[in-house]
Image (tube, rainbow, N blue to C red; front, top):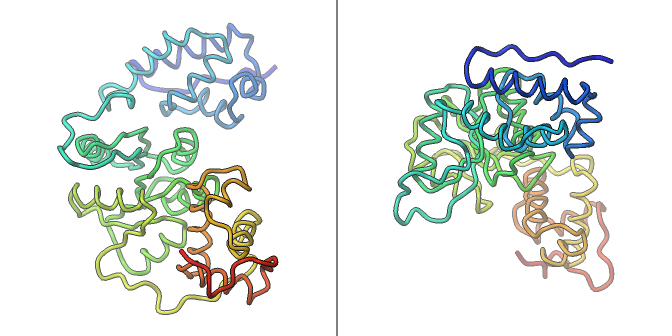
Length: 320
C-alpha cells in the first residue's frame, strides 16, 4: 500500500486543515485515490489534488473527499472557512453593499495570479452584485475549479504561471461549452484579441479598464455576446470552415439546425439545456467565422457536412 504524503504548507489555519485531513485519511486506512473518487463521486484527479496540492481546495471537492473518508463535514467546513481568511471571505457570503440597479447577478470565477488585483476584482464584483464562486491563481486549477463550480463567466488572466489563460480557456470550453470566458490582459493587441477568441473566449479586455467596464463586459459575455477592445475590427478574412474542425456533437447540432429544428427542439432531442445548445452553436460560429443561422445552414448543405432531411430548412428560409 502506498500512503499519499501530506502537502507542505505554512503554519496557520491552512496547515490545521491539511493536518486534520491527513489524519482522517490515515484513520480511513489510507485508501487509494480510485477508492476515494468512487466513494466521493469525484474524479481521481480531484481526489488526488485535494490530498496533495498545497493550494486550498474548493469546498465541493474537499467535502466530497472528507465524506469519502468518513470525516466530520461540519468540522472541516469550519476549518476550510478559517483557512480562507484573511485572503477572502467564504465564497457563499452574499455580496457586500451591492450597487442599486446593477442588474441580475452573474456567477463569476476569478482567475488572477496577482493577489492584490485578484482581491480588488473580487471586491468589485461583489459590490456590483455578482456572485464570486471561487478564486485561483493557477491555470490548471482554473480548469478544475470551473468544472466543479460551473460559473456563468470565468474572468481569466492571460499570463498565468504554468498553463496560460488562453490554454486554460480552451480546455474549459472544450469540457463545458456552456461556460463563457472573459480574458483580461495588461497588453491588448488585435492579434492577441483574435487569439483569445480562437481559444474559445467570448471576450478580451485590458486590465486598465475600470470596474464598470469589466461589469459591462461580464454581463455581455453572460448574454452570449462577444466583447472586444474598442477599435478591434476582427481578422481581415475568415478562413473557410473545415470538416475536421467540428467535433461529433457540434456536427450533430449543425445537422439538426440544417433540418430546421429550433434550439428548444434540438435541446429536447439531445437531452441537454437550450443554453448548452446555444453554446455549441457559438462554438460552431467561432470555428466557422459564420454568424447568422442561414449562413451556417448554407455551409452545412453546400459543403456536404450534413444533408437536410425532407421538409428541413433550406439556407434561404432558416432564421435566427
